[in-house]
Each structure stands twice: as C-alpha cells, then as structure tokens.
Image (cartoon, rainbow, N blue to C red; front, side):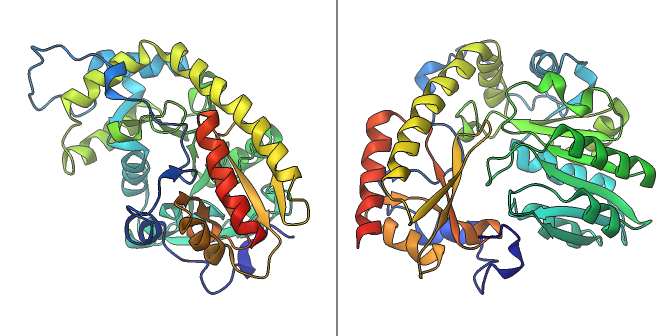
Length: 360
C-alpha cells in the first residue's frame, strides 16, 4: 500500500475535532487514540499554597524558560512559553507569514499546517510522503518558489512514527536557506532537544510541549525555541492573544522539568513493553494489519487491509468502548494511529476489543 495521500478518499479531510469532540466524546473507556503517553496525575506535582495568582510574564517565567533552554543546552531568551505547542505553531505562522508567501508541508500530518496559513493569506503546498513515509526532498525542491517562507517538518512524525533522516533534514534546511525561508520543526516526540537544528541555525524554529512524552496535555504548556529576535516578535504577538500562561500551570511545569529525567524514564518504561505487546498482537492478525515500525513515538501507524474505510473501522472499534484514531483525521486513508504507551493491562484490554472487531 502506498503512503502517498492523494488517494485518501472522500473522508480524507475528516476533521480530528469532530472525531474527538463530537463522535467519540464520552463513548470510550480505553484511550488508544490520543498521541501521548498515558497521562500523569496532579498528585504527582506540588504547588506552593502561597502561590500568587497574578498575570504572570508574557514570555514565560524566567525559571521555566531556563529549564526549557537547558533541554536545548541553549539560552533562555530563545524560549517563549505558550499555551501548548498549538499556540507556539500558530504564533510562528502569524509572525512569519505575509500574503502571497508559500508554505510547504506534508500529509499525513497535523491539519493546522495546511489550514492556518491560508487564513493569513499564504498558499500551501501539501506533499504526500513516499511508500516508507519519507520526505521526497527532490519534490520539495521542485515545489519551492521564490515566495517560499516556511517548510513545516514533524520529526518524529505524528502519525507515522517515523524520523526524518538527518541528510533529508539538512537538505530541507538548505532549500529554506536558499530561499531566505524558515524551517519550522515540530519536535514534540524528540526526547533529546539538544541536537535540534534550532540550536545552530537562526532560521529554524523548534516547537515542543509537556503533552506527549511527559503525558501532561491537560497542562496546556508548550514552547518555541528560536533566535531571540524572532522569539521577541512572537512574544509581542502572544501579548495580543493570550497575554501570558497561567502562573499555576507554569509553576507545575517547573516542577515537571526539574524532574525531567523521571518523566523520560517513565516514558521509556511504557514505550518498550507496550511496543513488544503490540508487535505480538499484530503478528496474530497477519493479512489484516501491517505495522509501520515507530522510531521513538508512543504510537504506531497500522495499515488496514480491509474493504471498509479506516473511519468505518474506528467507528466499530468505538462501539467496543475503545478509542483509536482514523487516518482520515490526519489526511490519510487506509490506516489508523494506535497508541501503545499504556499500562499493560489497559493496552491488553484495548487490543482484545480491537481483535473482536477484526474477527467480525
């Protein structure tokens, strides 16, 4: 099955918002659909009882920014703390893009990258990935125009689970540099941000958060890291939107990043056994499923070899009280995203329910 997404079907643009907040809300007991490690809880964190609930600082509390900068082995004035990675990406688009600019992005991926730029007057070229979910660098070079402003890259990728090869990333950076453009890196699943290109190149923006590998999406705490001048521009734009993050959330985030090693260890403890269980389960459904081996993500892409669409399949799985993510919500058809970084008993129960649907 090809990974090029031009033939994803009539439901290829089925919005994730509709699936998560309309179709499935309240209808599942086991979540194998969300793209983060199993969530942490508030009782793992500590908040000073005398914390003053003021407005906070638009760029983010200095202690938090320094902790984030330490993940990059970089400088605090390159960090802007945001309301999740979503706001960080949005601020980068809104500051960098002008009417007529070109954005190049990839499908399957996060729909924000092809839906937000047109709202700002930019044009978007969405390129399909090849059969191995790799970026065709030659196609990017052919597509780029003298109006190129941003190339959006997600590595490791949601939903494919694949890492962009270092040579390909370097080639994309060269294309961007020739055009005077930016490389916008969504690095939510990178456990080592010290090797990010944003630490060495001024035209690279790195975005991440506490949502995915830390398992704390409810904190809505993200950031961008780039050269200080662009960080300052994004901070000024943020002041016109959310002003600043919650000081409560930022205080909790300081607590998390001060113990980042513990959270990363928990992540690996769930990913390793979860992937082993998933591989064994997939082997029991040969001919119905093909697993795309993940490269450092808490989820995998599974190709479905069935007559029904992946959206239809996921609806039937939902009837068994299990949530998985249909590829249509991510600009793809014929497959699903399944998260395996869960406690063993939770994952086993969820996979058993999916097996019931596969046998039907």
